[in-house]
Length: 293
Ligand SMILES: [Mn+2]
Picture 1 (tube, rainbow, N blue to C red):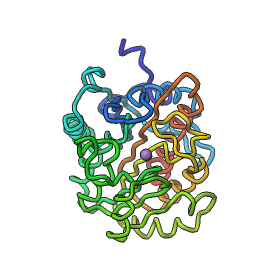
Picture 2: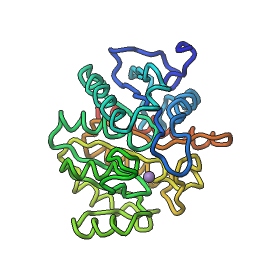
Picture 3: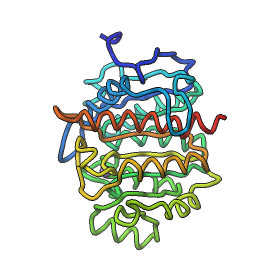
Picture 4: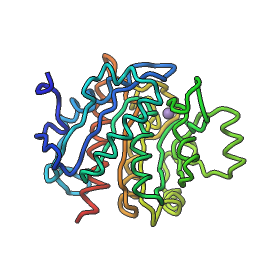
């Protein structure tokens, strides 16, 4: 079976010597509305086979890097883990990936899968900062009895004491809004950034001179372009909004890892799947290929 699985961009798997590792986390236990994010990683990988390896914007060829794909040995068992066990398992995986020297792209799976990669990077980079693209603040300390619920990932960043920049937000609870005021956090609400770039300067001011982890919840995009996600909030970011921001961050910051979460494929979701694959390619062009010049 495993020989039939897709490889990233349809390229040969270079194993433990690869420069870039795509770490799949097919996990969707705690999502509350639309399900299916456990099928996100395979859908992204399958779509990546149709993505050009030449990045027209940076004039770089993704084929000049080597890739490997990591999957849980038993996807069904992984998908059934309690959130805390899943976070612990992924932390161990990401430590191994970093020990091997891979630059890692995590692929989910619901947003709770981000914790393992974040924590492994934070161990190595105590001055780590996080850029989160999302419709949701995700600042609940716990939800449904778990600190590793998909609605809590940003609370884990804050708890770890890392600088956090959030872009694309347009939904939160009253308590989360109060927390933003109380802590004087900077939130770049979707309504204030769509079609604009002036705020990039403020984003960079919070990230520059630090190693940066970029986490993208696909619901940060407008559901008109990414309908295949668990909570498709209206009023989201465009493809240009996101790629212009990420390119700016790639040019000015050292991005040490990234992930793409909450792709929940369904029968008619090929555009969402292709966007996720194209975003993965763009991130590698911006964060790995272009800076290595
Ligand atoms: Mn979200």
